[in-house]
Image 1 (tube, rainbow, N blue to C red):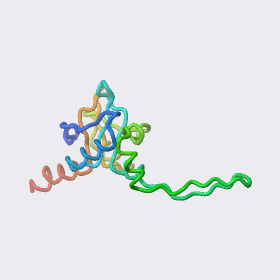
Image 2: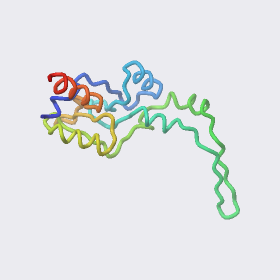
Image 3: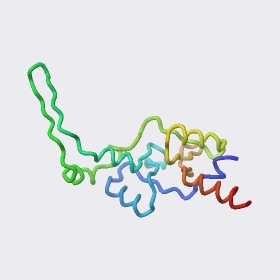
Image 4: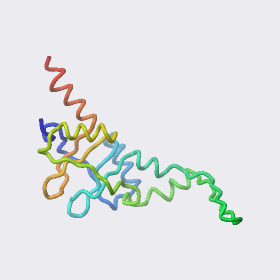
Length: 154
């Protein structure tokens, strides 16, 4: 079996200048947990998930640094305050840019399954030879496909 047999071809993606507000609205409207991030040429430049946003929005705790008798105190951030100034930031500030795993449509399905399992990813972009996203494969999609193709046939 190949990745193209399991991937979703109707890809919901965002551009790197999409705001966190726009991203959260999109994720909620489509009931999804993450999307590929594309540049102006529709090439993959990153991934962003609901977990990335949550980790970014988590308020910082009060921290005290002792720098040889000079004390620096970072005050605890307020969640509402951080949320208000973060919503209009571009997702390029939050998205995962390095070590982006991807597969091609002709890769063996087992490769995608292995990457998803090993790295605990929810979603994996499928990229063609030109670097353009042509699909995504997610854990939920895999479970549905297995159920529809194998379990429900019996």
